[in-house]
Image 1 (spheres, each protein chain N blue to C red):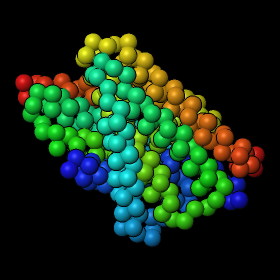
Image 2 (image 1 turned 90 degrees about the horizontal axis):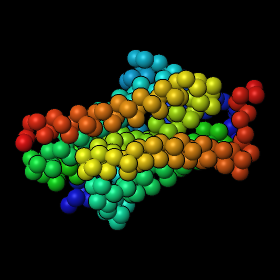
Image 3 (image 1 turned 180 degrees about the vertical axis):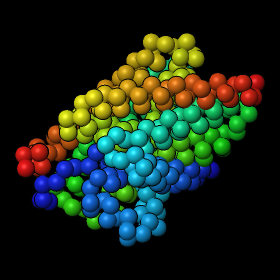
Image 4 (image 1 turned 90 degrees about the vertical axis):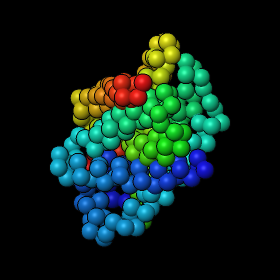
Length: 161
Length: 124
């Protein structure tokens, strides 16, 4: 288990944490390459789900909903494992967190799908999707963090000193 | 073909988000997630223009795959946004967490509407 340390606020890169500032001095080529490959993998998974679960303009966008909520659950699990439990090698967070999960989840499709539902005359579906994604995604992050902390016994040691 | 375009766009979008995030933090500090907020709003605006343009036949499907599904999809993120909001809340920055959630959703949605409207005004 790693030393108690405040977990980052920003899972991509948190310049408030000395170890993450130090990553920048090693050079960015391998870092950006890992993020690019991870991003492509994540985006392909999202695209695959969107093709498998199409929805009409007035329908509920289940594919994006599932992508964003599952991605939020996974970032909670991942961040506890690689920042609170185990000090992961340099490229693990950039590849999995910034790349794969960042490429998998999307805010732009979410926002445009709400607009499309409104334009198609399905204001109720649009509002339900807008609020439902936000609530489910935040609950999923919290659940991912809490369950992984419980399972690994990491707790919240950094706040207790 | 679509699959290759999506992968290519995402291979650009994900590092771009990381670089914007890093630059915004260096400028504004790590207390509030300005970087994620900016990429989410800009990505929603661009995707709005692309989808609005595609609806009137002005933007080809291959460009939507490359720049929309790929680039904007990977540039924007729900996982980073969600994690930041929950971590701000956990650390006692309740107001920042609420502001981040409200402003991100509101501004990205506004940007999507503006994007689609701009596309319709330009191309129809």
